[in-house]
Length: 229
Image (cartoon, rainbow, N blue to C red; front, side):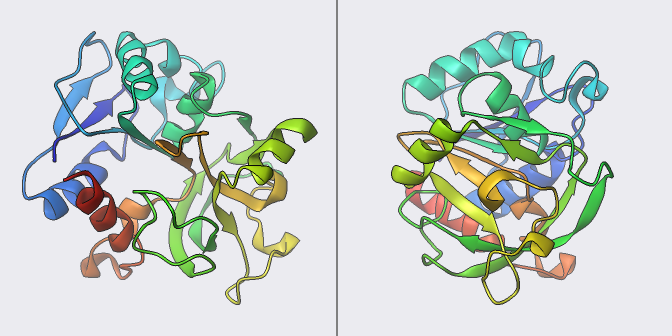
């Protein structure tokens, strides 16, 4: 398997996800600068977390117009798997690879803590090592993670089983108190219609090594590598 990680000015999780992928793949992913206009042949493209372009204008809006994103969109439409984490999720919505938008957190404060997530769909390369309904814990660190879409879009998302993860209580229940940012339908992670693109606000790469005190994200990374190898 070959992977590429896109690097923007302001990215701060590109190295984190690179290390997690290298541990699973046995080789380093390509690190592709935002000004590049081409990508090497790869099976997976990761748009990492951080604060691309300092989150000026609107989180992810400027990064979505970077030269490299034109090629990311082309590859995604050709079926290459694309993963956007945190700021990467914001960029994928701005690039129209995923529906909806990520708005300011409902509490208007930056959130940095570990949250409980329920796996809503285990039928994808991204989630194949989990079971539907399983509760996992990932860290979050964002200011603009409040997922919003209009009622018709949300209906289509639900009808087509495109929710990958939801924010829940430790017991797996949806509860307003367990939703850290006010996201509609407690959506924490979302697929495109073909389940080849995934955006999620929580960070599986920050929960993929025992040294980090949490390995709930390791099946995510390992399963993805296994599926694409």
